[in-house]
Amino acid sequence: MSVVLTVTENPTVYMGIVQIRSKENTETVMESLGPVEGAPAAELAYSLVLHRDFLFSQDSPILDVVLEKDGKHADALGPQGITFYELQGEHWKMTGVEHLPAHRSSSRELRGFLFFDVDTEAVYFPAELCRLSIFDGKGWSCEKYMEPMPVRSVSEDATAGKKLGSWFSAAQFGPEQATRIIVTGQEGSARLYEEGPDPVALFPGWGSEIASVHTGCGGGWQLLVTGQRDWTQADTIQAVEIRERRAQPVTSPVEVAGAVIALHTPATRSADEASASASAVAVVRNLRTGRYEVYRLSITCPN
Image (cartoon, rainbow, N blue to C red; front, side, top):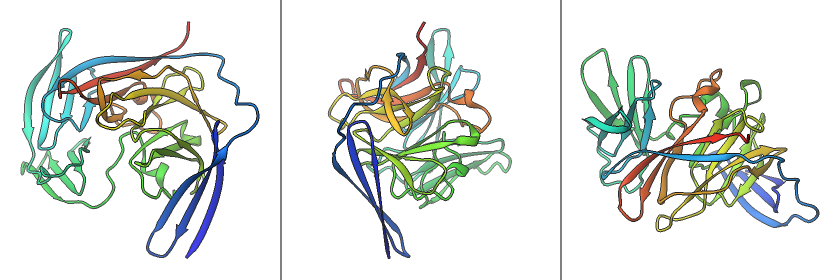
């Protein structure tokens, strides 16, 4: 067994990261070491605007949403099926439902991932994977799956060799030759990874959902982060930039009507196509109505 200690800082506190490594697994423990003294980091000389546009809502849970490239079709994943939507005029209309033979209806963990490929569709749930082969005509089949669920905006190459420990959500940002990733934990902190296997910075005070967007504003890439609210309070979403391993807010927090269930890019990001990350999609469970609402999030530059 070995123990590795890393000390990092953000604009307000020093953080210690201890990794306890054994043959079986690696455990990561993070603690605050005290406030940072001295002058604060200089604020960015510009401000950006975060926009929230309502798309559609439904009574049943939504775990994931994929917006198709034409901008007029959307697929919303629920615990037992996929609901299809189409933009007709100025409003999104439900056009159909496809049921899945999943066995996870009793699970309390509202998470899911919807994946489309040329000849395959796949749905990932906690501990379950459902597949549809377009060519064999056998329909959907589901099986036990114990690996972590994929993340739409993060490639396998970006996470290869990284000592991620336990994590909840992830975002990849930057050009292909200098890709960085951030993973969030349910304990309320996020870890930044660059070229090496170990985290190089820690950001406390963030929620569990995170997404990256490429706008060309400021440093080019921004991160959308949620606040540390539980499911009984209205949450917030805010854009930040990472500069010199520090997180700098670049927009005001935008309050949503409830808990953020999912936050991610609307389509799969290829390494050479940053346009796929030009906006993000958020799924919110409205505290007042109980409905699941879908929003598109975008950022505009200052005039």
